[in-house]
Length: 348
Image (cartoon, rainbow, N blue to C red; front, side, top):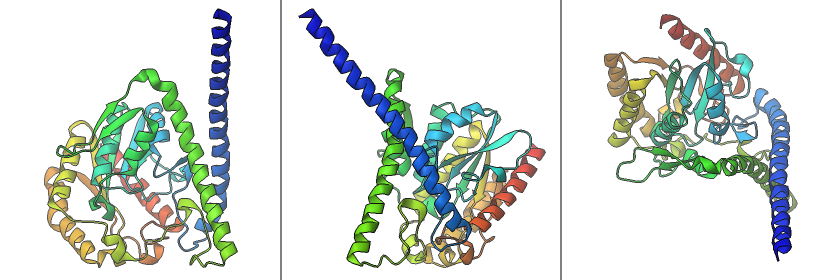
């Protein structure tokens, strides 16, 4: 009887170990596959193919939707971070050579694919809960058209739920996006969950490839050269983009509260991100501009909060997919950002 139990235990342990090894191996293989796809579509992006844009993948994670899985541990290893919270348009995530900052500072991206007032608070709270923000770090809060998106859930919360290490409370009425740590004893499971995210990313791209084959066999015109996943986007219909956003007073107050929360413990810079003229001309875009000019900028100036205003720095033609900058414009933006942040650091 005892020998039988030992045998069952050994068999079970062997199966479990084999499953763990397989998950880790598939996770690492996924990184290789995603790196290869990055290189393929980076060429099309740099050549200015319409609709082809960032985001891509880094360490097997989507650099917008899942960047936190790689950035949080990286932030802890750096002495000085410029932490971008929001919807960054820089090329830093896939071209670190463009990161030119003084005094040992490096960029860290805490961003969300459907960024909003809600995900901004979640990302900041998550970084604080993970003890990833150091005393010398500078937080750059990015205000863009999507800041005032009607957000019922966020990709940030979905990613955190997949990870399992933390939980985010986004329920009403408090809506303060409280982040709580789950038991550390389950650390190996949280690690394997991150590997599963990588595997899922390859699975989703494979699904898109199968869809491409299906459309090809059926002779269906998809309106563009088929490109899987988020390597291609279409936000050129500005009225449709604007319809996802809403200039509610509660959203505006929430953003002000987030700024106050950040500056209480950390150095804060606010960025008014590049805004396509076509989007600015929609009813929502006009409301957003009015808010910037009549409420936000006066508040920032009265509180002595440094802000960078890049709203009008780019023509519509410089946006690769309607709202994300093309490669050349992204480099231009990044270099201006380097210059402005460097000046800020020198004045500290």
